[in-house]
Length: 154
Image (tube, rainbow, N blue to C red; front, side, top):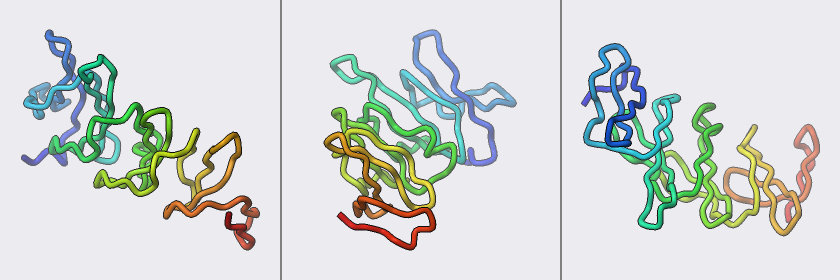
């Protein structure tokens, strides 16, 4: 299925489920994949959501072939990370934040009370009412000066 060059947009069907259609033709492209929530594609990825058996919306990420690269099991998936094509995508599960890569692998466990996306390889996270910094490997730092010459590891 070659959907890479197509502009795919979410389309709400009469049954209340979203599918993706080709924007130019309005013909279904990913018609076998139905979602309760669907967002626009950014850089070949789109956030989608499905309700679980308890009625909670669980979010994930698909590519333009319809492959669910991040399973619909998270309470939230960082839209900013998808829009700006960062390597790691912020996820929230059980009120904790962590990061997964674009293959859906957990890179930084969901253990933080709050988290910002990565910028220049560093993210601000919150744990136990304290803001700290982490790098893309999950190494935690207490301080980083503006030119990154002094980094204080926790």
